[in-house]
Image (cartoon, rainbow, N blue to C red; front, side, top):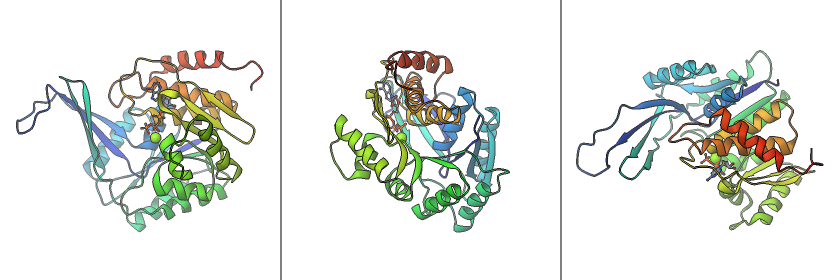
Length: 316
Ligand SMILES: Nc1ncnc2c1ncn2[C@@H]1O[C@H](COP(=O)(O)OP(=O)(O)OP(=O)(O)O)[C@@H](O)[C@H]1O
Ligand SMILES: [Mg+2]
């Protein structure tokens, strides 16, 4: 199998709990908290592990929460390449109100990275024994990190023959695609910001993705469409994949799970159409679990099997 490295510039420890009812001014009694590693690339590594693929996760860590993040990843047997930072790793807070079942997600500002720390992260990538076949860069940029840094990483990776999979948003995505990557997975909102067009219907989604491919921004564009599935576009393929109807519990982590499915497909040599179906299967399987939980492998297998049956016989 091809080698995979994930890079998470803005990792977190997700702390989740439940309360009987969320009301102001009163002390709220919460259940014992659950701690989970979080951040785009880290979630992709965790999801890849469930699919049976190893990857190396590179990320900044600092303070006691950074130590906890490393411990949690060790428990999941994720290979790590942490880079120590002065700032402490952020902790996000998620609480479910049991009376309504509603989930409240409190996102903390990311941990700033100094210029020197950014250089250490770049050096970590370049000091790997061999350049990886695939580099997955996923999640937001923390405070103090300019999109230029992302561009520097993309250039360094591409110079060593590594194919980059990019899943981020805003100016980072904008500048990243300007530089050109192998695969991007925008959702519709991210795609419309990239192309400057407001309401994108199915046809417009495919056309916008085709424009990105034609302009050399990415070789493969997978636009995720939430409950509508996804649209995959390359220079030879335009394919719409419906999402299976599932019992939806929480969509948290659907995007990261989908990226893991796509990368697993790339690393194991699936065709573009099959890869996109595996991505959709992973994304939809993730929505079947509550809270921040990713997917169960058995759900992925079942949904992927179902989606493959819908494939036209001639399509590779
Ligand atoms: N309600 C749903 N029902 C079935 N599948 C879903 C649903 N929502 C998401 N998915 C699956 O997850 C994939 C990714 O979802 P989505 O398009 O919401 O990504 P995203 O906006 O990047 O998510 P995230 O908020 O995790 O970054 C979809 O392509 C689909 O396969
Ligand atoms: Mg996303």
